[in-house]
Image 1 (cartoon, rainbow, N blue to C red):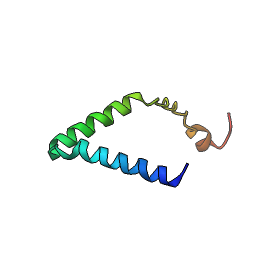
Image 2 (image 1 turned 60 degrees about the vertical axis):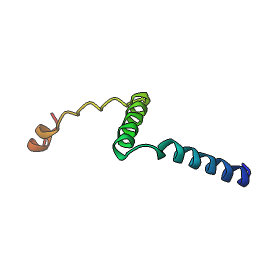
Image 3 (image 1 turned 45 degrees about the horizontal axis):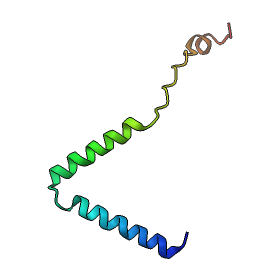
Length: 66
């Protein structure tokens, strides 16, 4: 992408973010950011947890494999 276009887009995003958050108090910003984070977290696909493996204590303690 052209570097001038990239700079322009970054500047536009910066100005947009500045105006979006400028009129809010710290508590309002915190609440809004929290809501955005929760919404994003709800959209992400979560990996299932791994099944716990059986321990090898019996094998390790006795020294035999069966």
